[in-house]
Length: 329
Ligand SMILES: NCC(=O)CCC(=O)O
Ligand SMILES: [Mg+2]
Image 1: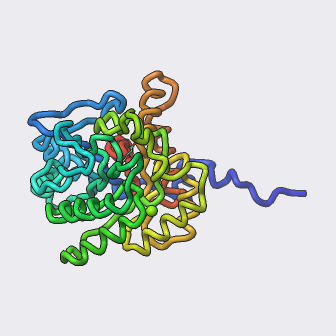
Image 2: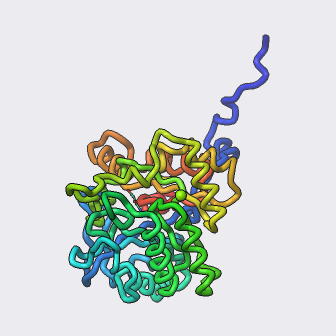
Image 3: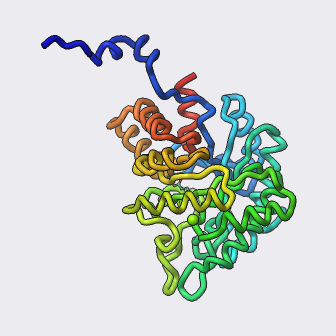
């Protein structure tokens, strides 16, 4: 029998490969996470995240101008809160003049068209390092969602375009959306971390913000009672469908690479944009392997972000965003 179909014809040169390529990466794919600290003139490298920095507000302004000039048009803000401002209920999170609220204004002043998304969860503000209020040895759901909604409103008032609740409390999207509507913030978006897994890939991020759960008697030592079990798939669909019903505009799967089956399932199930967070541990693994000369940094980076987009993500939150844009331009 003669072979009529030879698949290798479509791979025989870079010209034909690029002609039939299904997935292209552009700067429009990225959401850039940014870490903010108090102070002046600070750009400090995070130990476990080589080439990634915490910025004070003055240098944050400079950084977002640089991002905009590169074609990166969306940022996701996180703040490192001084220990003396942390408590169990995240009081500082509601401070209209807090670091996050000033960071939002700083970005908007420096670069008015930049899309500003903000992290909404209590962990950076919590003396226990939890995303919610701790009471009787557990993370109290409904008291937490009330605070998170107020926190989101405070970010909206400061000028945030999108709120990004990363806490995994039940019902928080409904609570947040309702409060935004009541207060006239109809156009403030919500990007829900709808399928966030209890993952060990978040370690370097917790270094970046000094926000790891504390090791104290009667305080839960991990986040397994609110973040999802990584053995589960159906639950991710259920969580995400609920968040869409409660008013989320964009949904998210987190972490990235190990969870692309979930992204693909959701792509076939929902009709809203899906974001993927390629998290700090994924970043750190590649940086470390590349430093040792064991992996080709840029080649593996491109393979990873392309796989995330191919799986069905429209938004990639990634610490590699700048590296990728430099590589492709
Ligand atoms: N709420 C945001 C995160 O937990 C980020 C985790 C990471 O980059 O490891
Ligand atoms: Mg949920």
